[in-house]
Length: 406
Image (cartoon, rainbow, N blue to C red; front, side, top):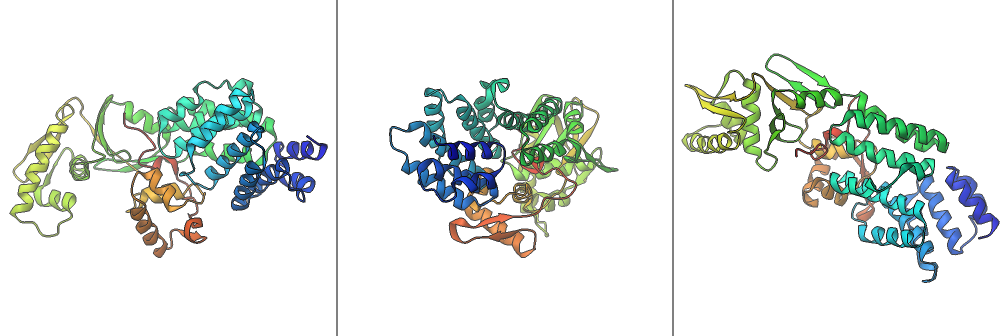
């Protein structure tokens, strides 16, 4: 490798994309194309970066398997930054295996971290943890060590392990400072703010208050019966009943929890669960059926008793019922939560992360755009959606799958 390529690579490793471009901007050989692509990615021109990296990968000969694999890893990083979650994960896995077989353990570790970050975005925590479980961060360079610790912290945050998250973020901050890359330091500081901003709301009959992540962790470990509107579940200690796929039953559980220790009139429950303004006997009959289903699901945690005017929730092993809700509740709150990270998302990536159809996401985006809450740029497949972060609130914990219920 010639001196200009070496100097450009060192400039990129130090976070100086302009210095790298000064050395290789006019060259079209494969190593220069790859370095130009990485430089453009660091400067924020992700579309151009993706094009250059693909050209570089095609230009390397089949015998240059390591160079090709490095280009694929770099393209995967661009795709992640561009929130192209549909990018072929299998190609990244193949590139990682190639790098490991040829002894390029640093770039192979980088590929593992990229795969783990993608799994985090779509809520697959177990897969994310497996991707980084075998990595020894002490053997990684400072920049990659910071990225690794960010992944570890992200997993801990979503699993409500605040002490582990703080420790990982502290290690990430130290590694980022050693790397001397301002953008990486800023990313670590942004992630650290998650622990010091409201993550949820506690709602009781008499008051409402914001909770930090560590307070949410303490609440869920308490003996109280918690109706969790962040994860659509009812829980008491280690016993969890998921109602994520039963919206009517969860609406009933939340209404009963908000009224505890009192009861809720039948007509009010019908309006809350079915959205009906006018109540007739068919609604009351359906309510009895749904209450029966809810009673059966919650039998280990609570009874749902009939009263002269409605129904009441009676905990079995607790003397307190609490409601845990998102910091901000909106009709399209889940979509807003993903967009609130400040990154540009495509509708297909949002659909993949939310586990819903792309058409449903597009309708939500159109509604939010009409209300002035989101904006888009680009056209067709290159169209991306973005919104400013919600000031003063944690965005990660707004996600429905961010904190697993099991």
